[in-house]
Length: 136
Figure 1: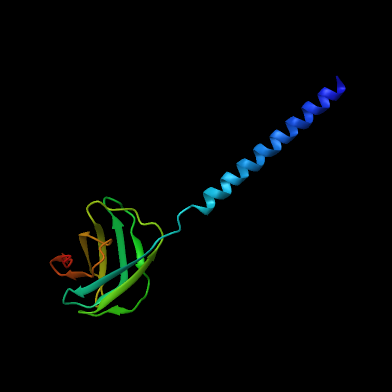
Figure 2: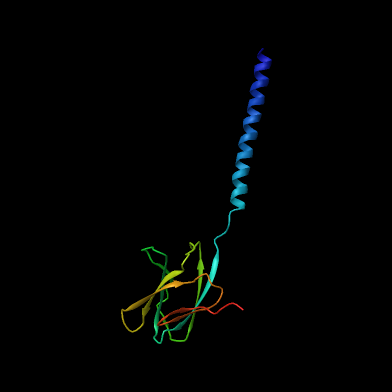
């Protein structure tokens, strides 16, 4: 009887040990397969007729909090391109993004709505709105 109890205990220990090993292996596999944070390049062209501050603030639809993409304090001249690299997960905005730009010569700003920041093309920001070249 003692032999049977000892064998049963040994079998139980082996089963529990294998179960723990298998569970740990699953966690490692999930970590290895987890997606990395994406890096996205956004190109904007200033065609507003004014110089803008290098600070670009964006938010997805109906959000109150702005996210700053470019923290440089330099001036973004009229006609110049601004290339931004965004790292991390940006939620998809079904109707585009709100973009807030500050004018260089004052504390005034404008907000453009519906800006497709996920576009592969350069986005031209004008005083009247936003334009994205059509895909050929």
